[in-house]
Image (cartoon, rainbow, N blue to C red; front, side):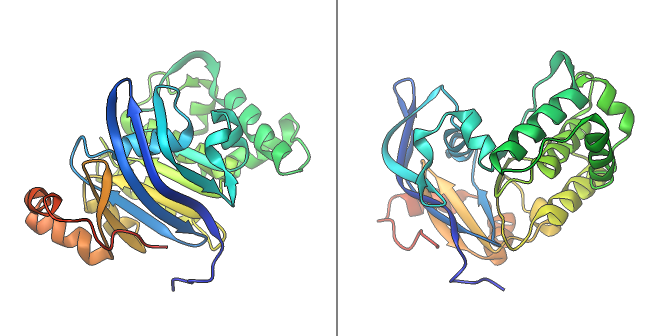
Length: 266
């Protein structure tokens, strides 16, 4: 059940952003409350991934106007690592390989940095090992992957599971998952979606960015937003995703020619 009185975790207001000299976001408005799952859908080039990167603080993107508040504070004033420490998580569409960096050590350092921000005690090697073994079960991941370099030699599905493992350890308040379903077969999608569902809760919010309705069969959103030309064109429920599956995005071009109305939910 959606609670209109739930705390606002992320509030995006009239957000405009560009990469180099190319405007991409052209007035995004979106409010995420605790306990909500939002899905953003749209064609390639609509601005979905740009939105995720701007929220995470990617240096290639410049915010030209608008605001983003995280729990009432100015998110845009923070460096990317600060955003991660305070509980904003980005799951990448294409997770990068980091040769020479132990996956286990990477996860331990990141987890302790997050715990420090939360005012919690740092986990020693043994305590962290117990925690990571527990979290591995969420994503049904072989412990042998902890001994390898971050994502090196991982399949697409293994990289995505590793992203959800990070999420399980960092316990973010706002999780942004950029096309988590990209490149996943049916079994991997089921496992990744199951992990996301286990980690979602009444005090957190999730923003799913996807092209396809199939992810939303596994992770049922409270709100579905259609993005086009750098703004949210329409908002609805799960039925909107089903409509997109049936009709495609051809109607978007016609609607873009009309005045924007009723695109915001909060």
